[in-house]
Image (cartoon, rainbow, N blue to C red):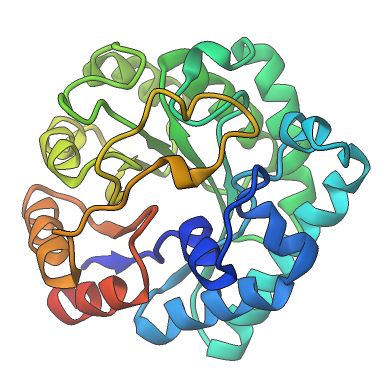
Length: 288
């Protein structure tokens, strides 16, 4: 049985707010938290069975760069509360505590060493603990980055899901260039409840899913809808308007990719950036 995940919170917020800022999804927590709640509500209404907290960018290094490090705990807890409120209003579902890559997305060379990253993730996980059913470590793009995420999230005893991002032109490799197969010893060591491929082109996700499908953890997939990741999108403060969304990835086309992931063994399927409620509704129709 497939569990339907939600879609991309950050890009949905940008679309609804009508602007992109260097704080990305955090901007809505600061200015319009009701938008975050509305996106959660709409994903649940579309058929999602899990709400991922809007915590991807609530990271000390990002808040420090924008001069608001003192709001870290407040924003982490707010992101969790909004997801819980939406779940409670819906009457069912799970809440996943989302954590994104330290340094910057798709740039594992900018991440701190695993031991240092683990301390930061452990702090976030402890803040999420009273609210969430599980932690989901998203868009980890190297072995060391994934190691730091797993080390940190494991401190609470909650289930941990690890989501890794692969190269858009070669889904057999992480964005670091390391082969996806190199993750296997790490998975055996930390035994996360689920291993997912995320925030890559759906074509690349389709390449990666069969590689991990028989490793033991639950297998999942949720792709993005970007044409590509521009070279200029590589540092804290870069805005997502640098990235172009695909025009050939409507709900039915995306669901065709998802059907293949399910055929290849994925039981956790949703969407990442540029995958909205309409896509999730079609996934629920097709896969449930």
